[in-house]
Every structure is written in structure tokens, then in C-alpha cells.
Figure (cartoon, chains in turn cyan, purple):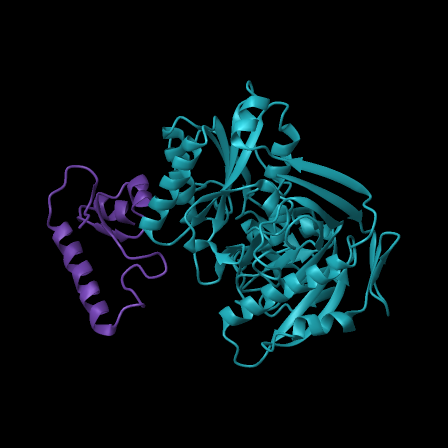
Length: 426
Length: 77
């Protein structure tokens, strides 16, 4: 499969009468976006705001981060099975608005959304302090249940991102990248001497609003399967997660997965990037066993020499990670696992809930329990109501002087387990 | 907790969903539970069915408690 990603660099976002993209500036009329959100009767109101890098702005409670894209050539549309038909995506041409993101916010669960600071210490930890953020704070109708609220905000985010992406249709890309994978036979013939490498992507699927969707399917109901890595770039995998902010994978990260980017960069040079294998992280032991069995079997059947395995979340998914690692290695396929750590505030506790000698090549995204003090910022997009309750905070989080004492856990993307963040260790 | 109680001389049964973690941390008597969000029950069942399920799990744990073990053992069905 061959996909071209045309990058449209966005250098500023401004509210204006007419929505358009001109010379890299995204002009948005929020009044025309409102109906896109409010077409779902479960959302009572939405407030749009803009947060720019360096501004004294805190966005919270953050649910998802999404990159606006539009499909201009090839089959299907962005976010298939969600806002476009379930056509197979990942080929043709897609335009992406770079340097910006749509950020959805709302007090869905209250304690499982995140914080994005646009300046100060917090900004150094979240990758989304570097993007121009079009924020949408969604207020639910009265009495709406949490899972309905989650779905409403999730879908509204995709509709808005798709609508903004449409503004790029017909524009000339500032830069174009080509991503191409071959069929199995072609790959072996073309790169006979290169190691065959796959990417095992573990999707958070614990349920109770810890969910990921693939082509519209709740991924806890899938058995592991293979996809072309370019499918994720068109939004085939999306986040429906309300879970600790630091190591959940927002939709933006699936669209811009750094593991996929780096494997493509080496494709045909030092390795043959064969495919992406997607698997889940369920709450029944039998599911964990079945999914890791299937994943290991797929690695064997594809004759892979090595795989990179990335995790999402922590705790019992550590067992899925270790099961995958152990069983894939037992098939004679080398693994590198990418995770993060909950090693306590002093960093001295056991980092993962599970372990095995087979996990001898590990990349960490950092210690989520590390404490940081976030400064008081001038403006809050969203609300601070839940700042003492989110995972990684405590009742003493909001201090008298307005600063926040928190664990990295509260910061969206701080210890991302696809390597999207900046933290690591040696 | 399991290990400290055993160190103090009390036999312990660890009822848990993710038995591999229990094995990693070193529990000796392990009884598999239902699921992570509801280890000791199943909200999808009727009240009567769930009571039976719960009773079965407790009896199984008690049975494990009185069973002599030589190292780690997972009490499957």
C-alpha cells in the first residue's frame, strides 16, 4: 500500500467570519463549527477557544487530541467507521494540517482526563504545548451518563477535525512524504537480505471508558490482526479513552505514530517493515491469553525476525505486554518493548506490574509518578474543578498560591509509550 | 500483602484475575478470579446465578487454603 501525506503547515489560528486556510493561517468561524458539534443532541453547548505555544494557558480536563486531515485521493475518508464509511483507507493521498490540533475537553469522568499547559514546566512534558490548539469544551445535557458523554465528545471531535481538514482540500502541500509497504512475496524478493520487522501495537481496551476503536469496532472485541501502517495515518485507529493522561494514546498519536514513522524511515535501508499487528488489553485473563497467543502466532506466520511492541496505559496491561514479549520471543522473534514506569515518587519501586527475563530490551517513556510543580497560569480553558481528583493528583494538588503539585501522570502525553514524548532513561 | 502475611506464618490464598502477576510477585496459593473490574462477581449475571458464582469462588479459596502446596500453585477448575 502506498500513501502520500501532504503536509500543510499551519502557522496561526484565528477566529474570523470566513473559515479558510490562507498562507498557512487557519481562519475559523466558531459559529459555523458549533452546529457540527450540536448535531448530537447529547451535547448542550460547546465553547471554542484557541491556545498557542508559549501562552499562559492551561487546558483541562483534556479528553482527546486530533490532527485534522482530509483524504484527497484513494479509497475512503478520514476516521473510517466513525465519521466516514468503513472503506479500507491507507492508500492514495491525504492532506494533514501540521502544527495544529483539535483538543476536546470536558469533565467526562472527572478524574481521568488530562492537563495541557502551553507554557512553564508542564509545557516541557506535553507534546501538545508545541501545537496551535483549537480547543472545544463540550457541556453535556443534564443527566447524561458518562459513557454517552464520552461517545458524544469523541464523535464531535472527529466531526470537527474532519470539517477543518476539508478546508485543506485543493491546497498545495508544503511538503509531501510517501509511505509504502509491499506485499509479503514482493518484500522478500525486493529486500532478501534485510531483517523482516513488524510493529505490535497494543490498544487500550479495558472497557469502562478505557477503549480504542478500529474502523468503528470496539477493539476489545477483536482478535489480533494485521493492518498496513498507513491505515492508522488515515484515522483507522482512534482513541475513546478516559484513562491516565500521561500514557494514553490520543488519536493524534495514532495518526502520527513515531514508531511507524521511524520504521518507515529505515524501510528498505536497514530493515523491511512488513506490517502493523494490532492487539488489545482486555480485563479477562482468557482474553489476555488468547490475544497474546494470536499475536505471537501472527509474528511466526509472517516470518518476522523482530518486532517493536508498544503498550498503552499501565497496571494490568503490563501483563499483556509481558505475555506478548514472552510468547513472541518463544517463537524465535526478537522483541523490543516500549512502556513507561510507575516506580513511585522516589523512583525506587518496581516499574512494571509484571516482568520476565525475555523482556531484555526495554525502552521507557519515563516515570509517571515523578512529581512536578506546575505554575499558576493566567487562563484556564475548561475548568479546574477536577484538578485535585485526576489520576496523579491529590487533595493537596491545588496550593494556596495557585500552583499545582502533581505527578507527571496528569499531563497529557508526558510518558507516552509510543515514544511520542521527550522523556526516557538509559 | 500476601507475602508479608505468609512470612508471619499465616497461609494465604490470593484470589486475583491476573494470575501471571500473582506468580511474578510470589504468591503460593492462587485462585483465578472473574475479571479485573469485578474480580469476585459478574454483574452480567442474574442475582441467583451471581450468588452461586460467588459461593463457588469462596469455597474454592477455602479449599485452596487447606491444601498443602509445594511452591506456587494456581487452582484452576
